[in-house]
Image 1 (cartoon, rainbow, N blue to C red):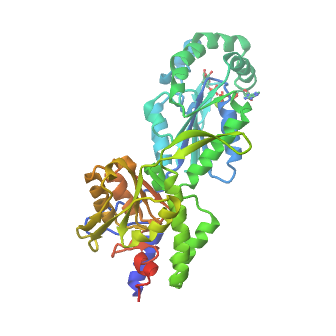
Image 2 (image 1 turned 180 degrees about the vertical axis):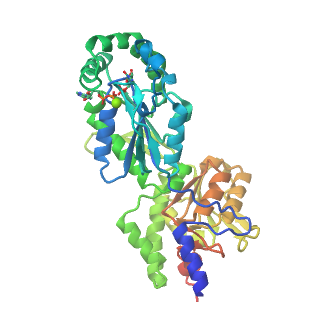
Length: 454
Ligand SMILES: Nc1ncnc2c1ncn2[C@@H]1O[C@H](COP(=O)(O)OP(=O)(O)O)[C@@H](O)[C@H]1O
Ligand SMILES: Nc1ccn([C@@H]2O[C@H](COP(=O)(O)O)[C@@H](O)[C@H]2O)c(=O)n1
Ligand SMILES: [Mg+2]
């Protein structure tokens, strides 16, 4: 490899930019998007308290908190003269356009200026404050789940659900201490606008929440579950967020070690086969976990009842010759007596793929199909194979495509064309090179596995 090719490759890896090649779908990977959490709920329900708990427990992440309150319209003198008639709990009290534009910028990795709102003067004060883009953006406020445009920005929607009497008691305490109000003001405002608007706008938005937290900050279990979910989502490859049907096996040091061996150019054929087989077994087991099951209670030798499940029986494997045949043993070891069909597709580079040979079970249309190919590269062969299965009457959502490694380009091609099919892989690689080889990849899998490389 000459130094120019090497430097192009390195820059492709660094930039995660797929090679533009012969019409192959090669949209560059989007920048890593932050995870946006919306936290709504009635006044003094504990939204700010819950957000602070989430932030402190996510201490190893970059988190930014944006308050909807910052986007209250500043009141002019005329309105201020009649402030007791003003409804601060109506959607029109907020500058939602400004909120949307700030959130869009943050989502796209740009810093923004957030206004500073003063609850005593009902006005914006000072120049505001600069917020930098972060891994996680939390948007908190009474009405953040009300407007569909704001909801659409969110990856997770939370509603803090606290008893109304408790909220009123807390609000009296907070507003008299922190917001310069007297008890009579707070009670009048509550009866006149806070409670009616809660019933008209805030409570109905609860139905959009993914998670409802009863008792707010007192609910440690709910907050702990939310933290776990956020951590899991942040660890996911961005393609799994775009395509929910792509499943990457949870990475462990054991798996990284096996990948290190199979990817190493110096690994012997013997070791390559051994570690590839171990990885294949994991992929097959993981893939089987996506099959439907029925519940079945059994009695154990101790006379106890065990609430078990029964595996789906109508299954078959289909290997894409020749590399896919390396996955057949693992499938047979997991599914006793499973039928396995074969497909041979010819084609090089990005030129058309041709079906050369196929032998599939006659009743394949009524089966769940595990399609076997260790490497998903451009996706061209995969598309040919999947189209053949569909033409035989296999239901798209009954196909699980199993790979050891997958290139982003192949994932885009397959998932866009077949959104109901599932892909299970053990690692998503960086890109493809000009020859449509996966980078960093593991070389020509079939040659290394079957010992036909020179
Ligand atoms: N679990 C709780 N127990 C006691 N006081 C609480 C609890 N959660 C919140 N508070 C208090 O209630 C008031 C309102 O809580 P806050 O989190 O600011 O609500 P919100 O942001 O929904 O208006 C604050 O003074 C806060 O200290
Ligand atoms: N000038 C203002 C602006 C808002 N409010 C009240 O604040 C409540 C929202 O804040 P929370 O922290 O309680 O969610 C909302 O219910 C408004 O009535 C205000 O009193 N004065
Ligand atoms: Mg608050």
